[in-house]
Image (cartoon, rainbow, N blue to C red):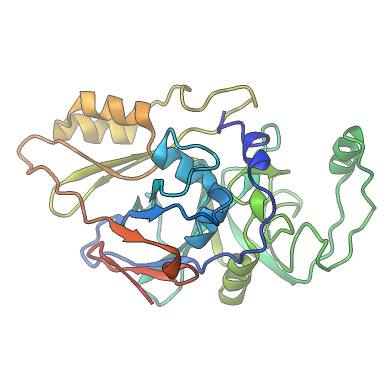
Length: 338
């Protein structure tokens, strides 16, 4: 299971007053490549309560940090060096509007007339109430939304001993936060919205909507217009052939269909397109098998015949002084703070 997200992360994810950092914004590679950003390392400080507080420093999620560090404790000891997965492969979809990859719990926004992409962590639908894969549009922008829970949501809550009102007014206790973007799928029940539970970002806990942190949805809401294209995919494996001929693979844990499933061990099958690329290039099959088993959640270079071994990009080391600053990753993969 995605680390039993409905249980374990809530245990160490008490609500924090710390604000989310600004979104990471990356310059798109000038040469048409798909690798952006740069992994960073962070040394856990005494005041870091859990992985969620660390993730918020980088506008990431605890789930992505768990993938990148594999055996890290939910509450790491001060002095622990943590890899923050800030390098990634752009999804293999048109670079237009909003792109959501459910498997990596990330939303990408490509601002029109700008050569950049913004990357945000998201929460998505839980097992049995999955966020649908689709290509749609933003049909409506809603500031200060009210929440009208569906009959199904009210029944599920009542089964847990929680009686929801027919309508929750706008305000600090509204589960939709202060901003919402309605999508043109279904009967309009699917939204990209904020939340009054910031630790639910990065988890599978919604009834199918996409949740974002308060500063993130506000930033996205201000930029997006009605009619913006929204592409929702579910691709745990991303594969890139860079302009210099080097190959990379990025593997995330697949979405579980049941809470008891262990997503570290669920089988992952390469798509026919990726399989064809691997066969044509003569990629190291054993290396790819190990990457599929490890599921690190960030790009790793694949040994390819007649192609020089890729040199990993430098990894930055940051501390609390970088908190709250936006990280701009240039097309070279190097990043700076502003």
